[in-house]
Image 1 (tube, rainbow, N blue to C red):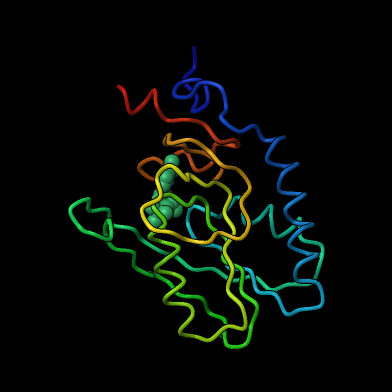
Image 2 (cartoon, rainbow, N blue to C red; image 1 turned 90 degrees about the horizontal axis):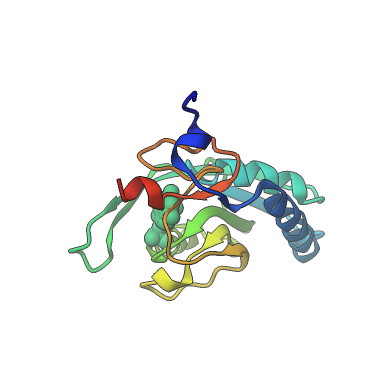
Amino acid sequence: MKETMENKLFGKPVIHQEAMRKRIKLLGKKIAKDYEGTDLLIVGVLKGAFAFFADLARAIPIPLEVDFLVVSRLRDKRRKDGGTVKIISNIASDLKGRNVLIVEDIVDSGYTVTFLKKELLKQKPNSLKFCTLLNKPERRKVDVTVDYICFEIPDRYVVGYGLDYKDKYRNLPYIASLDNVIAE
Ligand code: 5GP
């Protein structure tokens, strides 16, 4: 049999495309209601949030601006903060006085959200909120507030729909568990 990404590595999707489509539509409406009449800037955290960001932006039926931020995360279990988060490419827009919504792929330990919050508040936005496709509450190391969550998932490593394993599988159109591969 021909080896494709989908039949080789993964079992059933953890979250199907249709479930994501429905949930994102609802979340988009909720965000639109909360920000209606305000100046909203949504910022995608790359690379992981690229697919979710594109779908979410189109599900928010109010005028808004988009921007992006690229971060790198170097994991180091020996460090108290779990490693270092670095901004590789910063948001081009000025955040001062804006209503900013940061769009993440997944919140795991919470270190990235904590770091971004501290950094971005320096620019004095009018408001700063966080939205994530996936939330893994069992893995939390620091207490963070995530204002909009699409799905809560258990402590499993997942790929697809923007999320990678060694920079691959971001183009899988649904969320799958990587257990089979890690166990190899
Ligand atoms: P944290 O909340 O630990 O600072 O970091 C979240 C980041 O860790 C995510 O943006 C993602 O890059 C990575 N991450 C955490 N859990 C997973 C997972 O299950 N799959 C993938 N692909 N990345 C994950």
